[in-house]
Amino acid sequence: MKKISLAVIPGDGIGQEVVPLSLKVLDHLAALHGGVKFEYNHFDYGCDYYLKHGNMMAEDGIDRLGQSDSVFLGAVGDAGKVPDHISLWGLLIKIRREFQQELNVRPARVFEGVKSPLSNPKDFDLIVVRENSEGEYSEVGGRIFQEENEIAIQNSIFSRRATSQAVNYAFELAKTRRGSVTSATKSNGIFHAMPFWDEVFNDVSKKYPETLASSQHIDALAASFVTHPERYDVIVASNLFGDILTDIGAAIMGSIGIAPSANLNMNGKHPSMFEPVHGSAPDITGKGTANPVGQIWTAKMLLDHHGLEELGDVLLNAVEQVFKKGIMTPDIGGTSSTEEVVSAIISEIK
Ligand code: NAI
Ligand code: MG
View 1 (cartoon, rainbow, N blue to C red):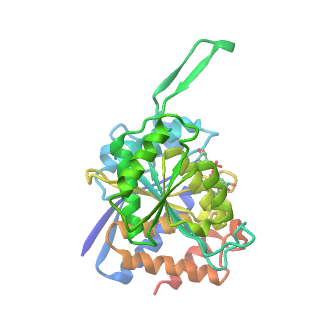
View 2 (view 1 turned 180 degrees about the vertical axis):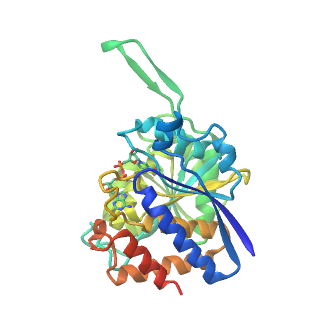
View 3 (view 1 turned 30 degrees about the vertical axis):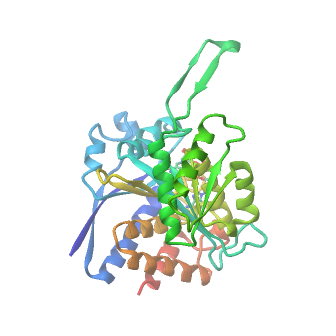
């Protein structure tokens, strides 16, 4: 029997609705498979935890989470209770950094039956590989002077190691897909970091002569995600550009509620983390209408990561069937509740 231990953090808002239901799906899959068992270590870290303890997680929280094989997270953030920069940096971003989850992988594709806001969505199926540890999201910088003289300085960090790691991963991934990698750049506007990014991309691309490599400026690329998403296979992007592109990817799928994401630790020293792209959605929390598919597709990425690709495919196939039947939550035009969608997915898994 193969055992996979998961540190489960539902977090805030709809995270507490979609995570427990997704565990039911995982248990159903494990029962079907027979040779695998999931062990859950539950953690109540989040904004309510902060109100009680003054921190988003226990002091030794990272050590505790690190005892599991992977982290399965819902969403973090409840601005009414804790300012967003405190909650996100105290839990989500802390985990990504401490566990050296240097890549964030986010797929987007069309699903039959789900209405995309695009009037004529072609058959798109793309994956964004986002550098997840440095780039524009850094704490380096500061503020000086006051009032009208105040100055804020924010530095970006681009290391050759992390940049080439992201680019290499993208090229390896493209080999298993349609063999094309697009680099998101902005070397016409960002003077130092992006010409460096382009250099690394060009160096790595030489190792992959069979792969189609191209670069596109992020503004044009963002527009093209809307007008021609079917042109893309694997896209590699810096932290900020990848963040923005993946929200567009989620939007053109029909809802951010569908989009999954994997935060990968590449050195094998710490767990990877699987979470949906969406946040805690305070506007729909408690209504029972949160789309569970982002969390469930994230579970598929977790299964793939642990070598259970067959189960992962069974799971995504069940989601496809349920969408085809029109069983979906209101964000993508349906009338079903979170629980009804999850039950339908479970009955579809045979
Ligand atoms: P959000 O993703 O929570 O919500 C944006 C919009 O999408 C809302 O209208 C929401 O109702 C809808 N939505 C999101 N997930 C949905 C789902 N599963 N089903 C149906 N509709 C869904 O982003 P927002 O509103 O900017 O942030 C809310 C809170 O979440 C903030 O505290 C923010 O900091 C946090 N956040 C956390 C993230 C994370 O934990 N990874 C990512 C993004 C935001
Ligand atoms: Mg985002």
